[in-house]
Image 1 (tube, rainbow, N blue to C red):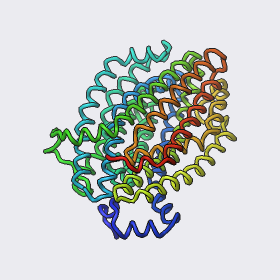
Image 2: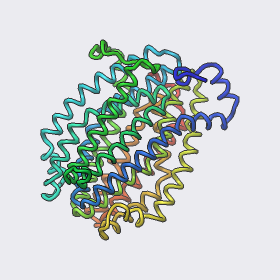
Image 3: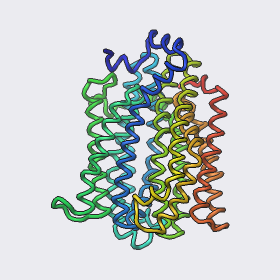
Length: 464
């Protein structure tokens, strides 16, 4: 039986088996790595769906409060993408070449920088919570409980950034099982705590959306403590040390930032565009924005295949290049895309066929259901394109080519999503249909850009 360490690196036997085994051997390795990530995302999104259903039953105002808080939170989290993407690429390349000291040092610097950045952003978000919600277009009835919800969520920001950063380390090393266990367990805990706090059962007061925020914070805390324990325990190939907690390796930090900064820019472009998008839709009224937020929650379900296989592509392409096997690395990208496209196509078909019934799980309000069903069908129609750009962008990041996904994101989100949303909603008055048609065009444009970049092969020459 192989140890954790041997599973996270490539030896000559592994390389020979992959090169001589053909597509079947490559697919087996992809599924071995992507399987836990896909299981993790299915379960997490299922739990998040239940959580949104619970909040949706409180009322449209509660859904709007969650949605208007999440957009600036996601924007703030973009700062941490530079660390996560840079760390994953460096760790994957180091594990592929057997340089475990570099992998350890990258993880150590990621932990230190995560702690510092999260404290700064959490303080700003907590202090300006009401101003942020007003800027986002929250109605007075949304502000009533929304400010309290936002403050609690911003205070818990450090927990989610730590768990995101350190699970990125584990995935870069090829361990997708541990992150699956951590994230699935913490999300189940979210439901177990959230149900009584939201509705006032088992002796707890009925706290509504505030209860959802408290449950979210506790679940994030548990995930952060768990992943810290794994990496400080000394049982994993990568080991963190308290003695080196605030010792800065400037050369490693520069490497992480150089690789990850375009990814942070990519996320800032995405989240900034989503904020403008949300601000435009919020102007259509609370019911329409509630439908929009429910659709974004459901959209997370459609991200599952793309994100899970993108994680596998990032790790396998990085390890393949680290082992100096660029052609094998390229095959991993193409085969991963094929598998992801089949799965996402099936999901898209289900969304088109059953859109109204899916919305009925979240709310009883007819107007919200009707508008949400329109958006869901648009989502379903672009699933293959969405999966393509997710997976191949993940492959590019594994090679350290993080600038091109940034270019694609900026062109798609700002050149098409935001511009077309302004045109379709504010000029042509197409309502929620116009808003989500803009999202669809964005996904198609990005998929073409990423596809041709990966096909060109220049990413094989990247130095990390």
